[in-house]
Length: 264
Picture 1: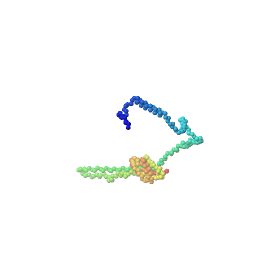
Picture 2: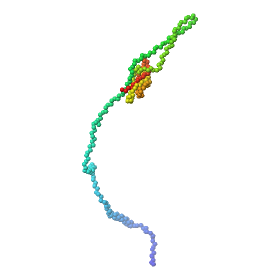
Picture 3: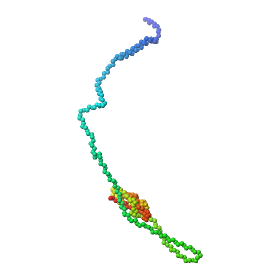
Picture 4: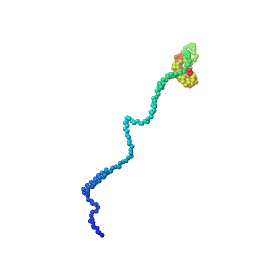
């Protein structure tokens, strides 16, 4: 067998010596050349053309704004013109005659039949009262004188004194014609009573005070219809009599007033 020559021992691992400046410049130049060459090689390749299907040409027309395009209309006969004018209005519908004037309303008044005035009775003057005669004075006694015949006393009226007239029990009843009217009654004859043919005479009893005004008004006898009775009472309440003053002395009296409702 052959023998292996012995190897002299040396340092283990890679060398730790720094690169020289020439080696560094050479590495930088190599890197720059590599990049420039790569970029130039890329510019030498041509891109594959993009094949697109056939596209129909598009036609674009510019239309002025003041002349809009009109749609194409098929050749056809135009429709006949339609007359849209309204018919002329009639003068009778425009000018209407004024309505006729209405007659003034008529208010019927009830007729009151009053009896003719009678002559006033003569005043009742009471007779004058008789005054009693005075009694004669009593004779004074005479002392120490011979008795003399006594004189006959004056006759004394033995009739009792006349009693004063009794006070009146109440106001007397007189006829309406003895008083007369300052404001006569005016009863209202309603249309409802006329349509219902209501008619009759209401006797109204009135207490007339010393001034001639109705102090108390009541219905003595009915006309047969309540509406007519109420109208008669209201008319007498609003009336006024002349004061009843026989001999110049006013007195309160009772009067019965007939109020007639008659359809004419």
